[in-house]
Image (tube, rainbow, N blue to C red; front, side, top):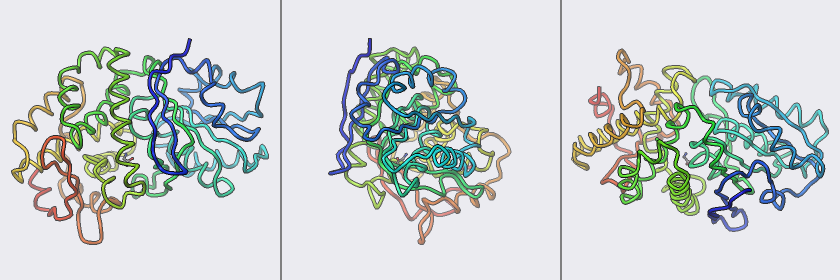
Length: 359
Ligand code: GLY
């Protein structure tokens, strides 16, 4: 029996949409049906999610819609032009028209590639997100960032393209490996650090419940993360200003992912190290206490997330990759730092020496 616990609205005028959070939606797609307009539906999943959920999810639609199922190879390494082309080729091959609806069933990688394909297919078709990882439920499925990686940088090709709805089924988190699950907690912690000190304290106090995947605790963490993200995105959809704070730890994180090769670190793991590096930089500027960096490291250790770079990373190579990141501006390196716990700021004046000082 599906349980709808929360509905959060992303307020973007005519492009506003709901985020539904609950349990056991896979067997019942009633919530999504009103968001599908045409007769043709494409469901995209990777090979792992396909085994678990594709059949039960698609069985909701088979009798009513012309259904196309597309299975992508799994992993960040496949968030690329080939996966994008696979979707477009199949959609064109099946004769899908401009009224088709694309549904991304899976984690952030499938969501990003499918969203980008939806943005481009015949100049844009309807798109729904059904995230099945914690990271996708709290972050990547919300806000309309879609895209693929390039050998020279993560997410270097993409579009802002909002979904019509997001359906986060907390029950799908039960089948995640511990590694995948905890990677999502890095993004949850990020929200506390950037914008909600009380939420951060709640996370410190309730981490054991979250690690036990307690339904109520998880629902609250997902709800609060989505609310905070929705607030930020509603004010700055295209990251002209405020939205950049959602990238706390990501400039470092993307450089880590790129330096080690996509797939070595999960995105959330790289972000976890990035959160510590950003906090350490903030502390060196005297903005937050050094003890706060230690509290964060202890939390990540308890969760089983990395808190420092592996030995042997060359600071100079690392700086070169950072310089390529799209969060750098014409003027220099741009980082999100913490003025305080719960208060992120954009700092465009970070010097290479400050970054090198972290090694
Ligand atoms: N993950 C950062 C953003 O959506 O803006």
